[in-house]
Length: 407
Ligand code: SF4
Image (cartoon, rainbow, N blue to C red):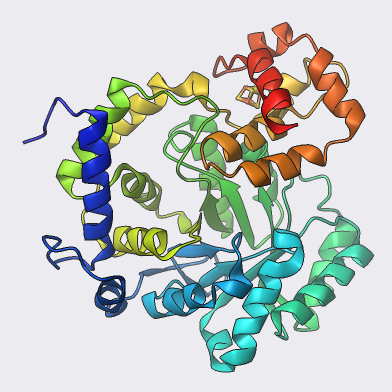
């Protein structure tokens, strides 16, 4: 029976217990709190499932280790990830100003055999082939490897940078054995990026924002289906669907309570919702500590599927809170504003701060915006943009809050 009157106190208490229980492999009792090493050993006896990565012929773990944490000083995380079968590792030239790649390289230096087990992804924000070559060379050196399994052009908001010159660059890099696959990551205008990429036979993989909020939208469903038909391997990121405005509503508590009664946390339920879609090869998750790694691994190992009621409730929750979540469709609101200020990017930085609690990253990103753009954000009239926003976000209010919080 589902408890109907969950309070915040119940929720926090039970979420903690479920998190620890979930850290155990399925079928192990959660009645006694395990020691960290014990739970790790129990879960390590099973490996995270694998799925085909598009048409590549490569299979990857359905859970991917996001590399945005202090890897040089947390080498144990990499070791545990390997033991648990989390063998898809994602990093970028820019993460930690290079320390993320260096941390993984440090691990491969110490454990050279581990490289064969890992599907290694890195990214470059550069668009010009010469610059891409420079970054690729640097990544290979930092990562202490001869080849990158999947090389992404980082954070595209449209496919214009994917020129014929870049295609030839990717083909050359593959022929030289420096990369095996090529693609891009995107957290803005994802749907149109995916649709365009599906027409390019040389794109092997895409990492995009995808979660229980976006996955039911017809445009996103069509874009994912097009990529699946084209054989493009898809990796979902930002799967928790954290927004810019916290709802803290009774509905959120009730939803959390329902999932806890079912044996998983709401966070695990949101991962499961994404894995329900077989077109998604893997979920990239930032897992900066063992607790999150174990909880996510437990969700991947657990065979329990979301029921139709679970899924319906997630959809209802998404609808109820949609005006607090920016879907990244920046072309819609930004085209209504003089000078097209990067509203969707600022919304993302707010999400890092408010949903992830990662104020440092949020401020770093915001601080990289040129001063004139920040000034433009402060003085823009957002009425037209708000009228166009399909989710009804209070854009003006959020931009001003961002200017105060992230400056
Ligand atoms: S503020 Fe609205 S229109 Fe702009 S990117 Fe976000 S969801 Fe899309």
